[in-house]
Length: 314
Image 1 (cartoon, helix red, strand yellow):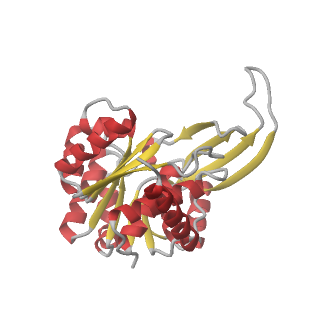
Image 2: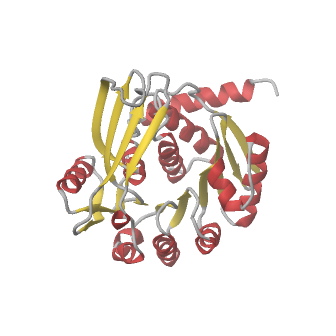
Image 3: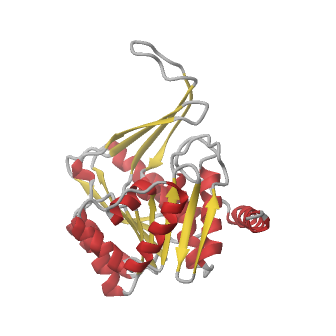
């Protein structure tokens, strides 16, 4: 059975590289194209598999040909898809990532409500969730599904990593009371705390406030500047390793996968944070959000980056 179960989105990811976005009425040649398994949940699951972690996925696809294709690719990737629902009559999610040479991205999403998780979908995956050591829950899914995942994790003693911010107060309270690790960007952190944030100093304060609400570890992305990681007794501001990404898509998903994998193997929070930063940097260095991670390489990048950071004058 998998060590980690991811509760989140699965779909088809179409990545298009272009020299420039055309003006209205114009056209542009596509210089690069990739069509692969995608979605936040699938990207995190793929990242974990790259890092030799056994992983299962709980999500929804349609009963169309695209759904069959992405499930087949997930199985080839070594992901347990027994928790993925095929919804009759629903279109599988399609995510279109259009990227210019300077890394400017435009993301188009076709995600029907029918391929979002319900509490019943999550409940049906209870045997899979109960077998895991760690549960990754994407908070962009509907509140009832998120709360059911948290309930099952609590019932079976499974540690929870929550990614994002829920849309409703009931789910927000459940997340802060039930997640061991919370990861969010600055916009999502503002929703979690119900206050505006901006800049590194505000993120440091927000991380401390979120720790006080219940989690053991909090990771906050600060725009294109840094990641802030806080835990009981410590915190670190980690500048982004790659400040000029080829495509920022999937960087956050790779960060979550790297953080989960490092914590699972017993790394201390700060070491896990640097490893996660290296995973994010590796992913934004190529087109598309699908991770292609090498554990030994990430360990080396994390070690060197942390040493350079620690040696820098304050």
